Every structure is written in structure tokens, then in C-alpha cells.
Amino acid sequence: MAATALLPSERDTQTAFGFIAIDEHTHKGCVIQEATDLGAYLVMIDTTVVPDRFVLYSLFFDRAQPCKVVWRTDEVIGAWFDGDEV
Image (cartoon, rainbow, N blue to C red; front, side, top):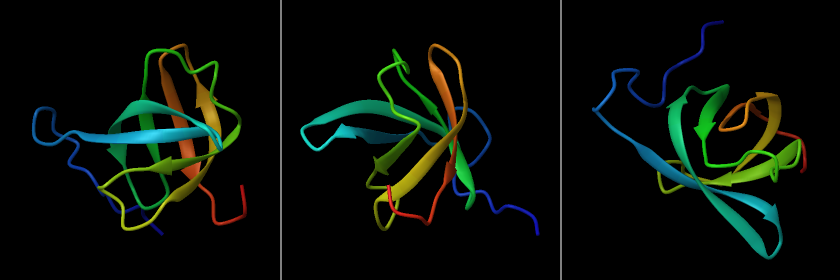
């Protein structure tokens, strides 16, 4: 089954902004660079504060997206959308 793109992969066409819940009182902003129905690339200043499981909020999505980190660099996170509880 192929993943369906939620954001255009072409640069400069659309940028979605989101917030990652670090805990119940702390959120960090991010740019959703690319997203499919399976996951997303998230760009932010510092990824070290993001736990391995988190909730992603954005006006782009119709609901909050529980996520699991698959890989990370200092500024980019590759995350799967996770249907399990966070």
C-alpha cells in the first residue's frame, strides 16, 4: 500500500506549521516539511527536547496526531503517525 501525500512535495507551494507537545504544559513550534498518511518530516531549531513519543498539533490536520520518532538529526525529525496512546 502506497502512502498518500498530505502536503505537496514541491518547495514554496505550502508550508504547514505545527506544535509538538513536550509535556502537558510545554509545546514547541515546528514546520511540517512533508507529510503523508503514514508520517511526517518535522523541522525545528532543537530536536533534543522532543520525546520519542509525542503529540503533533496543526490546523492542517483534522485531529491531534500521536507520533513516534523514527529518526532524528539536530534539526529534523522523521516521525510515524501512531494510532496507539502516547
